Image 1 (tube, rainbow, N blue to C red):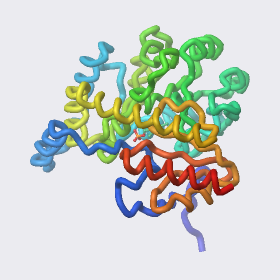
Image 2 (cartoon, rainbow, N blue to C red):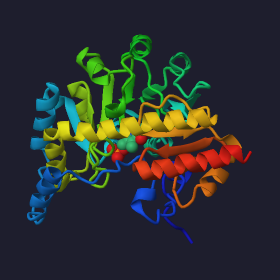
Image 3 (tube, rainbow, N blue to C red):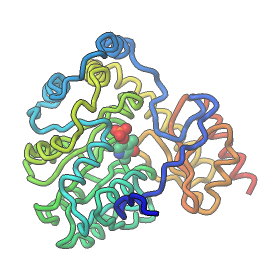
Length: 353
Ligand SMILES: *Cc1c(COP(=O)(O)O)cnc(C)c1O
């Protein structure tokens, strides 16, 4: 009997298998979420919108784009928002890639990249990270061919943590043809304290025709559950990506929470500072135990456990961490008490060997 057959790209994508939910939110150090609940001003703004959910959202996202323009000084028409920055990336790939085209990115990097690239019909070209968990931008530049449509640069890199340096990014961009879109994924930029780190928006302000920055409200802003992220870049790219976004996808509840968060950046920055100081302590404690941990500038740390990754994850149960078999374990910086338990678990693990 005949049955409908999806595009070959769909078969190539692994089906999503949800992880075991953590028994307690606080024990979940596996998704790089913000350990703080919403600010009262943000929760109130979202709640006010709940009372009018019989209406479709503002499809033009006027207030959100206006608030982004106001806080960044960059014109509203240079932004494209969607239900998380991953959704915006899907849109960008569908706007610029056709089957046979290539997308270059570092590996290991964000798990969503290979899936997003497969779905667009394009082919992934993965360039191994250097030993210290940083991008090998020279090798990435060499991997760009006439078939390359998009390059993804993740800084800080998920899951290893280091940033791309600003000077290195500029040198890289100077060598990439201007008809290749370069996406600088800055999902964790608010946690960066390295003064030499890449500053994506500065690059956007240089008016290069092919560079966009991805930002999200999911991490530092603590709105992972509401799904809002955006791209900032040349108006022509923003316009193309806006066309790919399903209408009414970002709810007014999410838009209002995002706008209220932009108005509360100072309060949110204190929370980000608290996470950064926990990160600093965790890195120091783990290194003192003998772990070789890359310099994370994000809200997680990377333990390069190799073949022991899954065993380590089992050993720290019921804390849930993100294990990549054969590579390592990514641990989100969460509640101080849970971080301390994780660090104790890491000590037991390393002394037990
Ligand atoms: C978490 C994350 C995002 C953001 O995802 P959203 O869809 O905005 O929640 C984007 N890029 C990287 C590298 C991430 O780790």
